[in-house]
Image (cartoon, rainbow, N blue to C red; front, side):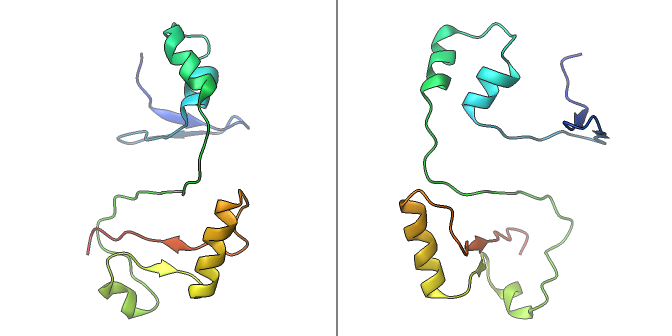
Length: 115
């Protein structure tokens, strides 16, 4: 009925939501694949065909009832901890991204807006 109520995996498993299904996709996947059979403006489809991904990051947003319980209490005092093996690893990950490579040792950041 025009409302997302579950997620079905490629294997056919279904996961039903209690309240909301939240998803994110790129414009090419959305307009050229997921909505391929829908009436979409030719201008929008053309833009989706021309879309090119740039360097980016993966973001996962969680609605938590409380702040994360870190194994190291120092992280509780920082709003956005960076998990890396140090400045050299961080710099190398950036350089590998600029060279269109996946970083060998990526840096992870966690935004803890519940703190």
